[in-house]
Amino acid sequence: MIDDSSQKILHGAGSLAGLSALVSGKVLIVTDGGIVKAGHVGRVVEMLEDAVVYDEVRENPTESDVARCTEFAREVRPDVIVGLGGGSSMDTAKGALFLLSGGGVISDYQGHGKAKGEMLPFVAIPTTAGTGSECQSFAVLSRDGSHEKMACGDTRALAKAVILDAELTGSMPLPVARLTALDALSHALESAVCKTRTEESQGFSFEAFRKIEPVIEKVLKGEASIEERGEMLMGAALAGKAIEASMLGAAHATANPLTAHFEVVHGRAVLTMLPTVMRWNAEVVGDIYEELKPGLVEWVESLRELAELEPVKVAAEMISQLAGEASKQWTGQFNPRGLTEEDFEEIYREALGR
Image (cartoon, rainbow, N blue to C red; front, side, top):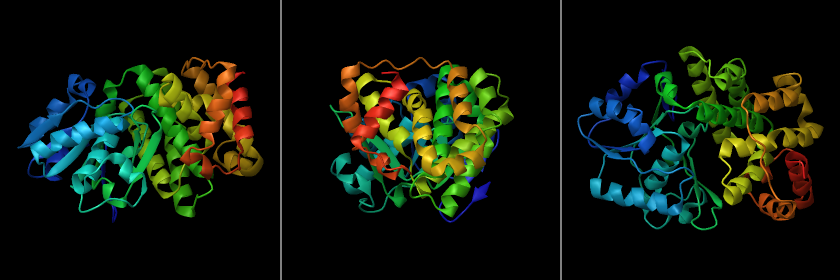
C-alpha cells in the first residue's frame, strides 16, 4: 500500500479485497455494461453492504452523459462514489462529483479550481492500464454536438483511494489492452518533456516509463503475465500522477481533433501523432528522450507496428481545419517546443502521409 497526504493506493493482485475497509454507507458504483459482463461489478457488489450500480457509462463521455449519471446519483443519495472501469468511468464519476456538489452544467467547471462545496468521497478502481485518470483530479469530457474536449479539474475531485488490482485487467480484449498501454506510454513521454515539468513530475514520468518499458511489448503481444500486467497498471497510475503534477503536449493536442471528427479511438489517435511530434520536439528536449531510452522515437514507432494499428486516413482538405483546432487545444500550450498553426499543419501532413 502507498499512502501519502492526498491519496491512498492499494496495489497488487487481489488488492480489490481491501475495498470494504475503505468505504462505508451507501456506495454508488459508476461503470459500464462491459465491466458488468466481465463480472467485476458483481464482485464489488458482493463486498459491500449497500451498493447501487450505474452502468450506463459511454466511451468519451459528454456533458449529457454526466448529467444523466448525476440525476441517477441524486435519486440514490450515496455516501461514496466508486469509479470502476476505464477512463470513461472515472471521468463520468468525477463529472458527477462536480455537479452534485455545485449544481449547474459541467461546462461551468472547465478549467481548474472551480468546484463548489464539499465533494463526496471518491474511490477509483481501474480495470484498464492506460489513462491514469485514477491519479488525476481532472475529468476530461466532451461537449455535446462539437465533441470538443473539456478538462474540468479541482484537487477535491482527486480519488481519496485507488485500487490497482492486476486481476481486473485480465478481462481486457487484446485491442483494448494495446491501446490503453500505448496511451499510458504517451502520458509518460509527454509529461516528461512538457513546459510545466518539475523535478517531482519528471520523477513520476521517469518511474512510469521504467515500469512500462520492460513489459509493454509483452502486453502488445497478449503475452503479459499477471505480474507484468501489474507493472503496466502501476506505470499507468504513475503517469497519471505525472500529468497531475505537470501536463501533456502536442501529441494529445493533435489527437483530439482526430477523435472528434473521425471517431478515432484515443490511444490510436495519440500514437498516430506521437512519433512525429517527438521528432519536432527533439530539437529542444532530445537529451531527455536520450536519457529515457536511446533510439526512443524509433522504438515508439516499432511499438505502433507491433500493436497493428491501422493508419488513420484523413482527406488532405481536412488538414488545415485539424491544425486550426489542434492549435487551440489546451494541452498544446504545454508542448516543449512552441508550435504555430502552420507547424501543426505540417505535423499532420508528416504523421498522416498527406
